[in-house]
Image 1 (cartoon, rainbow, N blue to C red):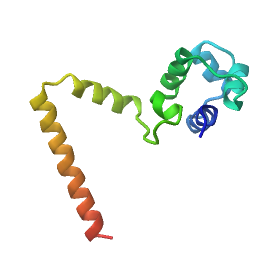
Image 2: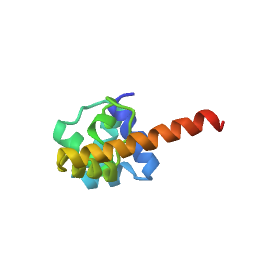
Image 3: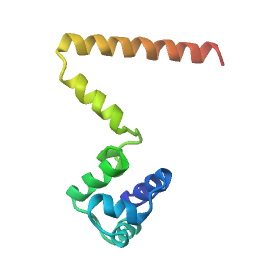
Length: 110
């Protein structure tokens, strides 16, 4: 999926008009429409503003990943990155344990 398609789907999912998104990033709704149609390509600075306004990562917006990392998740990951190695390792161990348990339950409790 292209940048413009992602923009349009995310914008519509959030119930934001092209004009509203344009105001949020400092441009017009007409320009947003041109981005969505692929008539013009925004600069990386504008892509970053759009990603912030739509509360997704730039990677998701441009189609490099299918994982939607919302603002809350990104903030948590940034906080985790600041932790000492032993604390971060502990958190990853807890996550791994929860994922393992979830996968096991999924297999046995279909």
